[in-house]
Length: 631
Image (cartoon, rainbow, N blue to C red; front, side, top):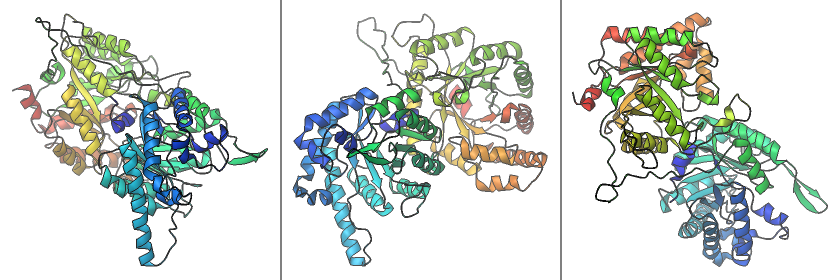
């Protein structure tokens, strides 16, 4: 069974296929042939092209139906074959994809004239376009596509009509909306990409992006413009292989795969989660993308359960306990976690000094990230053990799926148990393409869901193969959460799923607005999870701009950034930023289960002062921890 596409896309970069039309011409189909008709004329050829892309590494393939709508087929005398052609295209792709590859139903613009002025004519045109989309999309859905991809639209108005039709027909099917931005991140009519993307999201798209255009550099500009939306939805990018030129009566796209792969890696850093190719790209390009981005297929890890004494298989329910980390916390006060980054070198004295001070100030635990942003740092498991031995304070280690296979992850979990560590934050991990080390590739045998399931299995006394461990671990399992007020549904569903698998606490991305924190607490109140909103003390206007514009999942309200820029001196900016943070904590202290304080630039003195103030004020939070502890 295929995983949920949108969940899969949020966990890792997904590689799609490349061009169909231009690749078919390259394979000998006469230039100018309508390639959509090949679904019924040459189905084996279309099937073979899908197979080539899958072998090259595509996790998503598109149906050969880009222009298979009534408006375009009518000009060929094939207007009555819309359903037949789209149904055939969907079924050919589904057959090639099997159970491992996603199939996206490709829908392009109708080619209708949008320049009419008369209201009556415009109304008639809109209705005709909507009918054409409804006819095509219905056939694709009937044919078994997993996703719909609306692509190469130049007119925003037509794209919005297509989205509206798709949402009426299949409200829950993942929907990708892409426009062509020839240059400067704008449509041919001058509308900026992020404005088009915002309208598409409001209309019901799940993923927004760009395809076609004027080559890979122009696509990079489009993605930069779209990156303003990266916190609201995943982005997609399908660039052309350069500009076409005619050589010996053949149309040639000359941009080499390696050059494109470099640019595509930059797009990933800007928030592109779905990557493919458009005109001129081939399986060779897709294969190069896969190598350059270190992408690989996710291994589905089945959890085997130990058989009961009667020989019947049993599926133990998730252990109801909160885990020993949460159980050990003082529920009569507001729980506080403080993050310290392991250093990128071997001098750990300053981190140990900070842990000592935070323990004395009343922090409940130190959290230690694992090579955040794929930047090499000291092993957090070893550092956590040293901190606990020296300072007596509990620790939460971040465990990522990026750096170890299933064998290594399980060994790490066993090691954490033997060292007396009690808390693990299960995260997928940042893409390896952003690393500072040569030759790094991501493993990603499992994603964060699989890791939560894995740790829960150890809490029940079994490894992933179902073999008994002779001891039960008792970890408090944590997960990350990015609350998006404008579109919280997907992230909430993911969080609910992780809670069912055994997660017991949540550490969020930094939030800078009290009302957003309170809305998040209300939205998650039904879950037996201890929510730790991320609090990031701002210490300069420049750092605030960097966080807002360059780190995924972080959005700092404009009034806060403007306030910091009012001050010229860094000292005054820091003072203003810390005052903003103190007011935020005061506003939410009674509404949250706990607080997760992040050290800006690893300056632990800042969360130290905040921790001391929190303890002085005697805040207790919601009291949810006491209820979950059973006290």
